[in-house]
Length: 311
Image 1 (cartoon, rainbow, N blue to C red):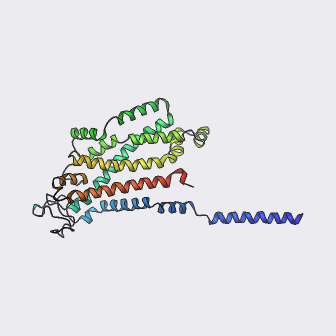
Image 2 (cartoon, rainbow, N blue to C red; image 1 turned 120 degrees about the vertical axis):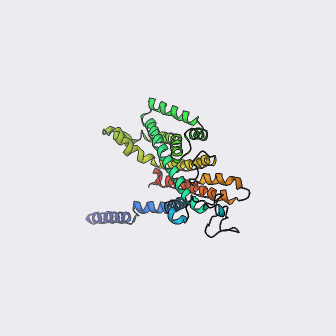
Image 3 (cartoon, rainbow, N blue to C red; image 1 turned 90 degrees about the vertical axis):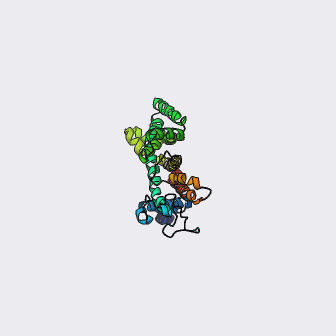
């Protein structure tokens, strides 16, 4: 009998040692996160492309080699390097005023990124505050926020933006403010539904039971569990704002000449579209790549930060 007890004790100890060894061999949370990030090819591609575009925008004065505002009518309408008659001084050619197209493209990245970032920031602050308040407090607050969302959804963004910009005048600051004040509805809808799903869960009720303040509950208990949805909306609205700015500039009511803007470059080249298609193809491809990278980044971050994928 004592021998069997000693054998059982040794077996339990062996199992304990084996369990501890397995836990030590298990990868750390940081290693798991790195594996998930680098295993998501869309996220990696989006990060890489967006990082390159941001770097190009920051280093535009060093990379351009020309002043994006300098005009040279003698060198106007030079084709890009892959076409006959190109000029080595202007790799992507020149526009109808002789301005270097590569320089305007690089400086235009600054305009697009700035508008997308600040418009998403303004609309995100407004919509997130409204959505969280509606989802957490409910009742009359929810009714008021829902009414405001319905009013906003009844207003066509492009038409309202065109009217406001036409009245106030087109400029970078006006475009950012108008887009920021018009794109908050998706933030409000998504955050309201996300908060409604988690406000009655056990950890939120436990925080209420121990006397945590409303601000603490919202910031430390609710927001970390809905931030993945917020990330997706931020990236979507950033891409949406970039496209809307390009559309406004294309119609002549966005960023005004001679400021380099990809939408304005497309607008200026539309008259020569049948004869010199590269004038709109180059900024059009740049817009496509930037929006694609932002969307892939948001989709990948959502997959990586989703609560069900944190194990």
